[in-house]
Image 1 (spheres, helix red, strand yellow):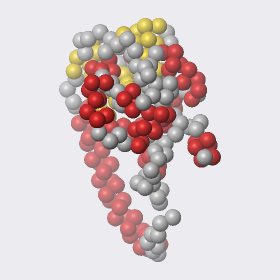
Image 2: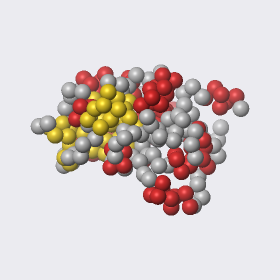
Image 3: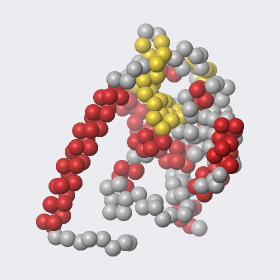
Image 4: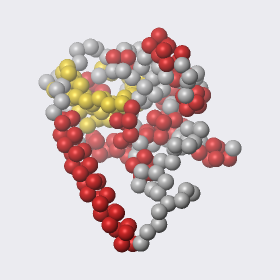
Length: 247
């Protein structure tokens, strides 16, 4: 472990209280940003989308399941994948516990991926998950909401040096980097109003860290995420850590 400053209890309390004021300010700022998210204009969705679900084919409006709000996570599991993205999978470990609480606030939560429904169902069984997961395999949904790209669109990325982490994650998904990066994780919020579906919010990249519940916990430990010097991406599916440590 790296060397670190060691002080007295009084010195720690003084420094901790100074930090606490900044944490409180960040909390107030987060409250303000949450308010501004709710004030974003809604965009009406006129295009008809259909999804394969455990209960048969459904439209986007039917995915609301009788509620007025729908929160969708585009889980990286493309048609060429043999298993879901390990990073998406690490976040998905927390979804089951959240579903009941979201439902209680009139929000339906589910994941959408382009892999065929049978692959998604098999992977759910492996991971022990229960949250709803539907396939957009025959739909433009992922492409229209920037969760999937064509091989032509990602070609410029593949012309450069591909980061080792991308190669590692692609291998873990049973595909190559080209197949892997055609998918992207995105969180979208929709509202059903007067029978019409509207998009109300969307985020991606580091905006999705809210779904990785272990990151805020690591951020409060002495070593933090401790990711800087690692040459190998550390995240694994929850049933793979023992195997990874045994190497």
